[in-house]
Length: 461
Image 1 (cartoon, rainbow, N blue to C red):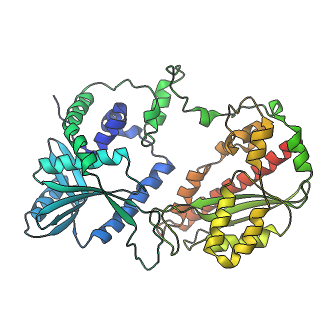
Image 2 (cartoon, rainbow, N blue to C red):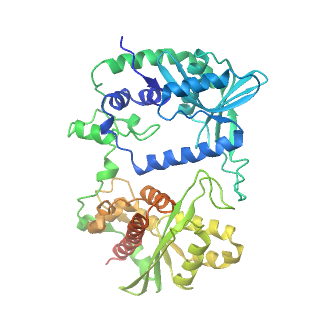
């Protein structure tokens, strides 16, 4: 049987879906990574760099793209006497090549650590370290301890580059050893799969778990209009929902109309955009904390008299306080503030905790919030909603011309986060930064314009 060059990432891809592995080897040109995947890769790289500082000092095995050189450098390092710490140590066994995030030898005992940007150990993390440990032991390194290091969300960055406490190390040998015993079977079966024709595998939960498959667009095109197997979820429903809905088919309950008619003016329509970092860049913040970097607010002084206020800082400085201060200056002291769900309420409360001097004013804004999601769910019905009341599902049934799918590049929260990450990077050129800024502003403004249209529809307009 022909043996293919396998790696940890290829094996785990094959465990997710055999077709994904086959395409990654034979048709890598077809893969498309979305904004969420790119953000996840960047988070992993950032956590990996911090891990080297926390587990160091140590030697980085950096052979570039020359795998043979990496293997030789690893062998040379392992031959040295005494304690050592290696980053990206390379091992090969039975055609499988892996790199270990952290490998330590202390008083003759070996410890392998797999570093993850996640906040808890997951099943595919155990597969990762099991594959790496199987290869390392096959290459002659007897491992005494196996661990996965994850991000501790309780960590608060004190500033000054001090990330001690960012990672939490969890022993996993008991869970990983049984998977190591299964790894030879995985290798054999995946080599057999790769030697054959493209597998015929229908779309299913494996297209999203544990990660979005980069070949999903190809598989959708390949499947065409073929009916889905019985019991398989319609993964495209969320994407196509209501794109061609007829607004006239919507029905509004009279209670919503009565409630909205009693509310005074001015009225504000507010939406926040937030960003999360695995490695917090600003003092006083924590991993994966939702940090407000942008807001849009349409303000209706009288019925039909709208003005638009907005905030977006792409300088790279901490934007939270400036965003809060700008909002307080723009939103006024009176009138309801329409939002969609509880997201804005929780962000207001969180920013208030961060900046106690702004807390009273932010608390007053929070007290004025009116949740359009609750009103919509309870009092609006349209046959195309099919039980989904997200703003992006509801909007096409009310104002199809405002469909977020018509926006370029930035058309949902994940792509807005990805755009912000790119915009604040020092290597991003000014023209590209301003292009992204414009697209983020357009997206956030679309959200609050959508709130205006939803509120008017519920009011009977």
